[in-house]
Every structure is written in C-alpha cells, then in structure tokens.
Image 1: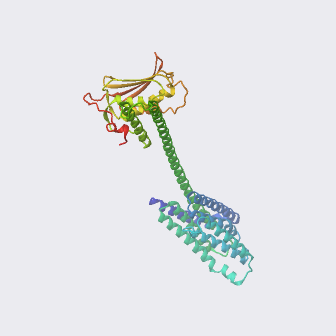
Image 2: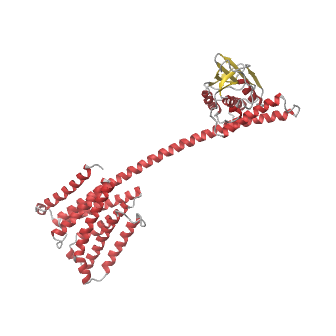
Image 3: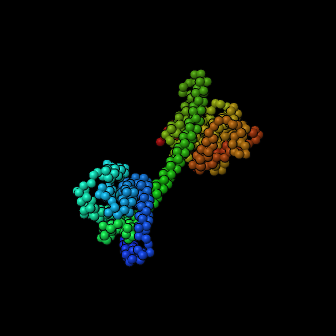
Length: 484
C-alpha cells in the first residue's frame, strides 16, 4: 500500500465530513430544502447504498471463501433494514418497547460489525446470518414485552448514547487498524466509512438528541459514510473477481498442460504398441522356422546359432521398448550392417525375402536403431503387400551406407499413403524417420516400377574404413541384445 494512499483517503473523508457539516449548518440548506422530505430521501439513499454494499460483501465472501465480508454483510442488512427506517421517526413518537426493540437491533448490528474483524471459527461465514436472524427475532420479542420503568430508564438513559457512540467508534477504529495491519487500502477505506458514520452519530447526539431525527447534516454524513463503505466493498469485490479470474486462467493452463502430456503419453503408448506388434510378428516367424526344422538340425548348427542371436536381438529390443526406451538411442559405435539385417530377415516368413548386403559394410550409430527401422519397414511390407516379393539390399555409395527395402506391392499414391486399406496405426514410418534422423541419416519412400512397388531407402553414415569387423555376439551388440 503506497504511503500517500491512506493519507489521501483520510484527508478526503475528513474534508467531505467537515464541508457537509459547515454547509448544512449555515441555514441556507434549511431555507431551500424541505427538511423532513429531504431527510427521508437521504435515509432511503443511505439504505440503498448500505443494502448494495451488503450484497457486494456477500459476493466477496463467496468468491474468496473469507467469512469476514459475510459478517459485514449481515451487519449492514440489519442496520439498513431495521435501524435506518426507525430513524425517520422521532423518539418521542415511539413508545418504550419500540425504542427498546430499536436499541436491540442497533446493538446487534454493532456486535456483528465488531465480530467481522475476527469471526469465531466455529460459526464461519453463516454465523453472521444466524446472529442476524437471532437479533431480528429478539427485537420482535421485545415489542411484545410489557413496558416498565426499568425498561424506560434503560432505553432513555445513557446506555443508548454510550452504545451508539462507543460501538461505532470501536468498530471504526478496529477496521482502520485492520486495514493498516493488512496493508489493505480497501479495508482502510471501509474503516474510514465507519468513522464517518461514527461522526454522524456524534453530531446527532451533540446537536440535540431529544429532537426528531430530521437533521439534514446527520442524514448527509450517514449517506457519505455508507457510500465510502460501498466503494471499499466494491473494490474488495473487484480484487476478488481478479483473483478468481487469475486462478481460472492458471487452472486452464494446467489443464492444457495436462492434456498435452496425456496426448504425448497416448502417442508414446501407440508407438510402443506398434513396435511390440512388430517384434511379436518376428518372434512368430522364428517359431515357424524352428517348427519346420523338424529336429533334423543339430542344436549347435550354424543356422540355429544365427536364429538364436536373431531371437535374442528381437527380445532385447522388446525389453528396451517395455522399459520406455522406444526412441532412446544407445551408445554410438561402429558396427557391421550385415549381421543386424540378416537376423531380422531370418525372422520374416510371411513371404519371400531376397537379402543382398555388400560384405564388410560398416556404419556408425546404434545397432538397435537400425534393427528397429528395418523391422518397421519389413512389417510394413507384410501388412500392405502380403505375399509379395521383398528385396533387402545394402550398398556403400561414397560416404553413405544405403539400405533399401523394396516390395512388389501397390506402391504409394501421390498423397504418400498406401493404396491398400489394411489396418495399421500409421506410426511405423514416422517413427522410422525420427530414428533415422537420430543416426545422422534419413529415410525416403517412393513408388517404383518394373516391377511396381514401394521402395524405402535408408541412408546412414559410413564408418571409418579402418574399423575392424566384429562378429555378432551377445556382447558386442549391447543396444540390440541388452539394455545397458
């Protein structure tokens, strides 16, 4: 809260109060205005301002969850609905019990206002309205009680003056102190409005409390005080609305982030499902080969060793996918291309596959990535060109290793999608392109003729010529067979 803000508010409230008292006591206002009708109009305006302020206080309590504005609202309702209408009637025109009932309502409004500083925790926001109802019922009960000398002394004695002046002064001082303590300018203005109301009551008592309450200065000060209270509560409501709006924007941002996270998780799950299906298709192929063998081969034969390593490679890749490593790239190593592709081709049994790899061809990167890309391409051929001839070739062209997977299927239309409407997630090729980019390569698809089909060309960097060929074992292809 800026240092000049409270000073300006205090000086402004004091100036308005003094100006109203001076102007309305010169006699000019009484000569120009009809006193009683003007007083009634000012009273109605004050009641309207107080009722609107009570509504704003209730809204603020609802928006913020703070019970204090709710207690202020209850106090203003009691003051504006019961107390203010009675002020239009002179005390001499009311019998003792009506004056006693008015005193009960007055004291109830002041108690509610004082409790609004720190409401009892057990009563919370609804406590103020419960106390309002209890005060209203008590005021009605007092009307039905018989008049007595003790009641007359209680009502007409100094208790009313002390209660009114002391109550308003205490409430005003408490709210001003609360505004300073909380460094809240709206709360300080609320306290200043109560100060003006206290000044109005003091002026009324000091002028002549026995005369009818038709003094325009008193009514004007009361209206000014309630207008200041209304302005303070309007500012509190505005701040509460801004806070709610900010919270809603924050929640929307969090929901958008959660939706994006869920979308990415769904994409990752779909990609993982796609790769698992491809791996299972390969393992189904090896079971077919082993079943067709009929036990004629020896367990230690070269063919069985090759199939064993192919199965280990596929299982290692599936384990990596289950561990969340679908698009993770392992250590960059120099490796031989032929063993990786040969093992994958051996697992495919749905159609004829021709395999032609340049001997001693090396590349650099992660062998698991190459295995995943080639697996996706072979499964793509099986899905969209079932039974068709598939040719896998690998050649060195300058500083690039070119691996081509070509089928004799329907090829690609101009839109870049398969003509054959077979079921598939459509994720394999995008995943493969992303994986190729991680290896410093690229994957291109095109329709070819003679014979017609689809050719997928994977380009990878050539390893240094001095790299020694390494046999394919469980240990030298860690990213294919084992997750390290």
